[in-house]
Length: 446
Ligand code: URA
Image (tube, rainbow, N blue to C red; front, side):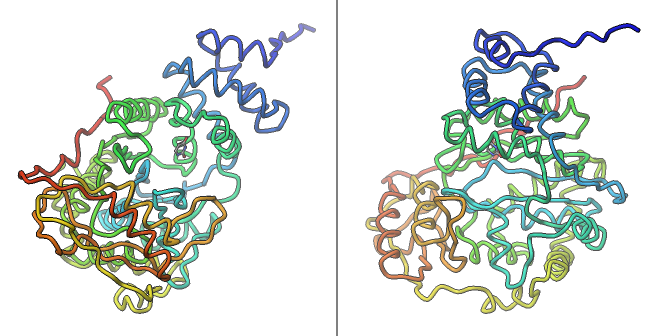
């Protein structure tokens, strides 16, 4: 009987290889990720590997292999019974980014299926699940069966992580957080994509945000991340596109939880602010063309606008809310949503053109009022937030409203005011508003 030769894998030799800038073989990555998930590779060796990757980077082949291994480290959602094209969106996160709440019903009404597994807010960036939980009764914790049934009934469902989805990422992300290895493009790519692709989708559009309120501070880093993600998804036979969008100032006019649900419902009823609608419709159009529901961007845009004008997209969100146990009446009668006891304006200290509205400071103001978390297990106050946020380029006179603050406590309101003092800058000269969508990255022709 012939012997099967198995290579001997010694963790420190593999770490050494990456440390010295060599390319890891798929078997070496498999040994590392499977071992780490099972616990046979300890945290200290994985931390050293993450640091080696941080400094040496990874080729696209290595990044794609890592993504696939992390995706397959746990359960995959079985969406095979859904016969529509399955497509989703992921945003790297920002302040006032409520796009998912509009996008899922819009794409669903146009004939797509949107199995959206979302996250909670952490730090200044809000989370879709927290926003949805502002709606009385809305359950984000559906079983896989309920998730698929909801998508079959209304075309979309928005839930929290189910079962054991990408457990390798869960463990590795927590480790990266405490070992200064989060800002690595291959590690971020594998982390985001392993979770998204476990949803069983045919296509994914990414909203890669850059700027003061974003995870990627510079445009160049955001561009590299977007290109890497598009390439890795394409190698895994998924339809891919990535938008590079500005997150120096908040998106839309509201930041918080209830206040963002209200802004989203108004947007679905046809009253959305321009910047929010521009980003949402561009992302939706890319989703529809990617999975061939629309044959051009123009056709996609027309189909999307119809879903708003006819009220279909709003009705779809209402139906999804009901299927999740939420009270759909709250989507028309906003007094049924959590409401803050204090509402006060914050006004312009001088005349001029607004040259800066810092998404970072606005996001922090929401966090200090209790609308965001500084630790993953913090409870949040859904009622607090900031609305009517003035925009870069707007001309104001001293005493004009720049925002309205919704607070539950006088002390926290005062803290929020201090942060808002740092959020705005003014110029005597006219200011051109920033370009919202700087680029759309599509897969290279093969
Ligand atoms: N979000 C993720 O899910 N993973 C990262 O590594 C960074 C942001």
